[in-house]
Image (cartoon, rainbow, N blue to C red; front, top):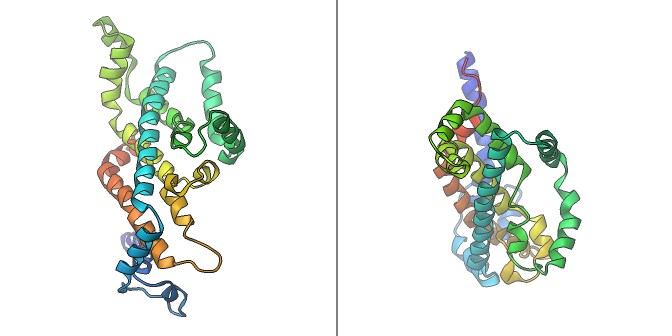
Length: 270
């Protein structure tokens, strides 16, 4: 009985999470009028081609999609490099001020992101990066969550004896990091990559603040530009949202196993 109840709760939770995706795909195949019927459609219609034609006619959608991918990929690569090296330093070395610096990193996780928006905009404007992609991926390269995640993972999975043995065998500190520590951090790196990529892909506020021209818009901002108070083609917006979701689904399918391993690392088995 308990097993059936557990499966029932899991099934209900899964349906709740999948319902928005299903409705997005269904609405992408209907015109805007169908969404406001007394009984909104629950099955696919025949307006998918029309909605896609409107989407590609009103937006440089593939350019927007490519810019989103470029910004998310650059943010992810830089975050992996900087957060793994910072996590390695915090986990392995004992230096003056280490505890204070790590406390500042933790404090950075507690601050609301909107507090940094105005200083970030002023800095980006002073550097002349307004309406450029680097204004989006450079400020997010080193995230406090990534440093914390990598520090905790490296400290829990790499024994000090292993590091000492590698040093005795002649490993330099860089070789220690590159050839001993990083190969054991696959699950943590996959988890961090997924978190940073999805966060950058879905970022809306910062692009809204620093981007100016439709050709430089990322996908969330481009889809927002289709909306207006009097006439919004919601089927077109949903078609764009469905296309924009595909890269995230592929990424999750490729990294799900490693991400789960990273999230379960350190969890007691008993």
